[in-house]
Image (cartoon, rainbow, N blue to C red):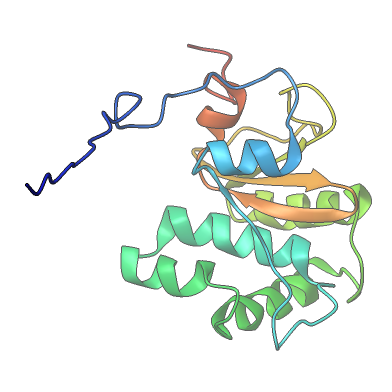
Length: 170
């Protein structure tokens, strides 16, 4: 007599990831993995020290707003040269020296973008969800996230703050 025994396990869970509400404070890697609103700016062959991360994050945010989907995907990829090619002229036009950037440098970028009719919102990952700069209001919006001396691009600010970042609406 031969007996074949097969065990089956029932799958657990509903089969899809549950949506988590945005916390009051960003939780670095956890927050970035929860939302698709942040594009992480990684060191690249053309910027190995990541000294252009502020300009590169602005370039990615602007590309999401202005470029075709194919161009945007080429720009958001840190391995491609296009991100750095667009960031270097932005540094020169804003009068920001090449090197590590902080909030004072982001304000210089903000002044340049204001001349072009673009609002720049800078969020601090360690503070609550409010923008850390007071930027003039324009129809076009670019957003960046500052955390521990590094900038990342924010492509969907409404997901970060949980509401419209510019007018306080819901």
